Amino acid sequence: MRSRPSGFRLYDHRRPSPASCAVRARGGGARQFRAGLSGNHGCPKRETGNLGRFKASLRENVLGSPKELMKLSVPSLVYAVQNNMAFLALSNLDAAVYQVTYQLKIPCTALCTVLMLNRTLSKLQWISVFMLCGGVILVQWKPAQATKVVVEQNPLLGFGAIAVAVLCSGFAGVYFEKVLKSSDTSLWVRNIQMYLSGIVVTLVGVYLSDGAEIKEKGFFYGYTHYVWLVIFLASVGGLYTSIVVKYTDNIMKGFSAAAAIVLSTVASVMLFGLQITLTFAVGTLLVCVSIYLYGLPRQDTTSIQQGETASKERVSGV
Image 1 (spheres, one colour):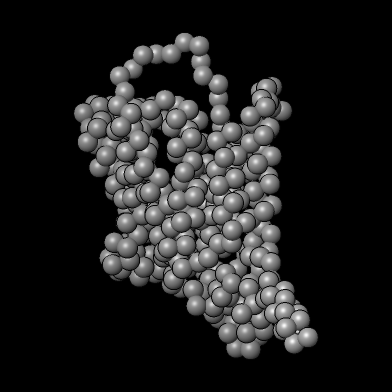
Image 2 (cartoon, one colour):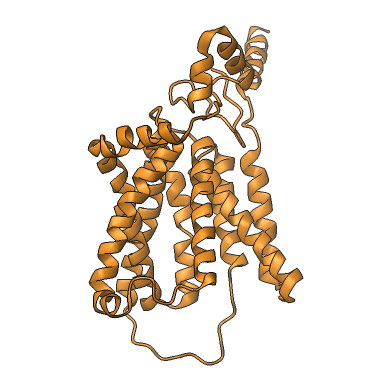
């Protein structure tokens, strides 16, 4: 069977082309075409509405669907565990060791994609995934400081925590991708469902750790304009990430994050005079090459194999 080209796709391989979607819209599916992204068809559709429809959608999909809320609480809980394990690992490992081991989340995400979504990656794509992992490590690498603060660390605990964080990162991302692509529910409703669960989880953690100080000074004590700006940018980044996952996959999210790291470092060079090191240059090269290799279409070896078989039959006939 002929293999499909693989690489940078806006649509899933099971989904029709934009042209066929437009034909279906003109043929009577215009209402569905405008309603949102269909998990069954995957056609690009514009979401329109007003405040009344938004409230009705919230009542139906959030307040009236506790099962869906529970479904989206899974990645929220897993992400909370991941963040705490990452902090625990950082406090028990050297920064360089943490930096190297934490990037294993990239191949772990690829493995979860294969196992949970039944997708296949070519050998070249697997090579590009590990190349991306090495490139990100080199881009973020910082030389050790001459002076170090002596802190009691437990390396065994640190490695255990980083292993849990890596597994949580891969599982939560692919789980959320599967939920996004397996139903007709709007992307924005899915975000609301997941982040409501995340707010509950993080509020519990905040009050358990800093409850007394919050009661004394208030929850928003110390929130400056810069803090609100960071919160806003993080929110936009979260929405952007969900869009990337919806229309591509978690592996492409990892590639886009790596490209963002490179671009932000280049911006720091131009704006703040940051010095480019050899490790950064090599890492940037690896990231760019890995993105290119991952986007290459798979080679169709069917015709080659058929030609070789036919030539062998002719030789044996002689």
